[in-house]
Length: 370
Image 1: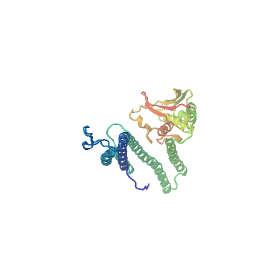
Image 2: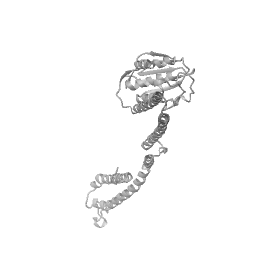
Image 3: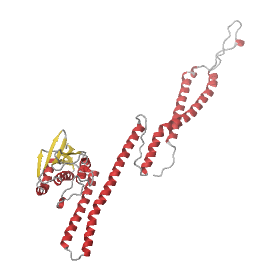
Image 4: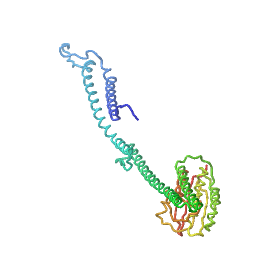
């Protein structure tokens, strides 16, 4: 934004300091005049020995109001001039020292505007308004750097994931062009599968973006009903893998988007089913409400997960174990990332913990509906 040049804050503070100092000096001189000089009478207050009567004691000379004014006014003017010079010089130095932290913050903001997110101010000294602003700015830079790095990784993963189905489609088309006698139905089926995977990936990315924005209408939603609906939808997949799917617990009402919360529950249950290796395991979904919090727990059996791997499962395109992809439930590596995004948009928490016997326990805590 183009702005007209104006006086600096340091100059304005300097003028303010000097002005207040001059005002204080003028008030002090006014007090001297009002409470002292005005009560001194004007005219002759005494005579010398030459005017005294014979035999009477000599009277000392006593200055009247005019005499005091003649002696006081020049000295008062000199004192005000000294206060003005002292106020300007001292105010300039004092304002410079006080505004030095602000200059460091400004330099850091310029560096950030130029694309550098690694710079930190790290102001030393005791806590005050400038240190509080500096700490808040450093915290903002740290979050921005983390989000920017996450977005870079996300963009790289997206480009990698999208490149794969596009490259497969191109290869299939090249093969069909070189071999016109190739089975057309098989080619169409494979192209349909690859294209469906790309569509699923794009829809998952859009859903992830919607959850991150948090722009949805909130309504009262019962997690127990969503758990039953998700289990009913995924029951054929569980039966195909010979997995027992059990939904228990009571009502757990929360406020949010029913569509997004249903996707959250569905992703958790689907993740528990497709990662439940070897076949023949169990998936338990439990809902409950206590102390104003609605809780959803999804627990599944399966292989043991390294504890250091679990915190990274919510990152986009991060998969904990190899799994068999079947039909429409083929994953794109965004299931838990979408869950984490939806939970965060609903002011809740998601905790993933490996089970000692193998498998995963996912616990979602959301604020209860008012």
